Image 1: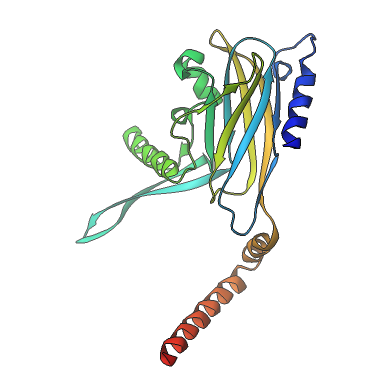
Image 2 (image 1 turned 90 degrees about the vertical axis):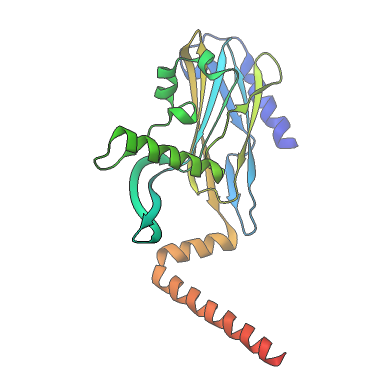
Length: 248
């Protein structure tokens, strides 16, 4: 609770009148926590953002995780078997994506601006690798988005921005349990009459700590040993189960 009160105080202190330049001076953004720690038993978290806008206008907030290359596979019947029959690789795919808006998307900014700033799932721009037709790219792209949404890594709809006063606002984003680690970027935009007049970039760090972090580092730095250890542990567990049932 103290962190929330202190954060609100710091943000509100920035409300003193001053001459504002275009861009970040129009917005002040603060995170309740700028680091999400993934420990053993981590079952998700909530990202809370507070902010102040110093001029009238609509807000859009975008949260993006580290970008990855993703392969999308399509299953089908082949030689009497159900298996992968086609695939497509995409690059620049955010591992996590969510967004919030203070109004209706099409009323806040035109589609061309939403695409430029990556506001809304339909505005995400990731590149297909290889030679593919537009229809093929669209089909696989839609499948990629559906899969991400199903796992909670892409937004289904925009989150709600709550205004605590004319200037002071808050928004919450849910972080799923299996969220990828790394540096996340939070972009906040202020729009007036369909054009962007201010923006602010904020970073969020998601990382593993404690025992889970040690296992993660060991698995990546010693992949062969980790694989051998996993097999031995599985064999030992199977032996214990077999021994137990023999005694029964």
